[in-house]
Length: 136
View 1: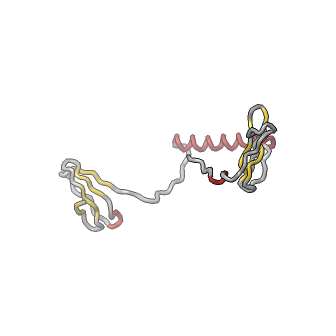
View 2: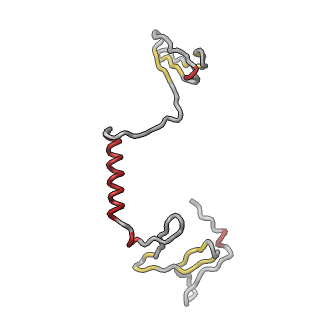
């Protein structure tokens, strides 16, 4: 992903006492660079919720998160092994019939308009027009 540098073009980098650029970050609100702080070779970061309110990671209830994760894993395992139902809803469908030329055609009903019929041994393809099968 390319970085758009145009918003930084008219901004000056913050320099240290020796006139060298130091650690900094762009502030979208003030439209200026501001110093970055950190320790042990890593930047300090502020963690926020979806509303921008700070979250103290020391106050996160790890046991509660682990319990939620365990419950979610059990649910997924149950869906995968078939012991727990998974509610699904089909929002569209594509019906395709495959028969041999010696077999009877299925009924062309309006509910399956757009369905395809492939005659496997001849390679012919037909489409349900709602009341009859027509050549694709």
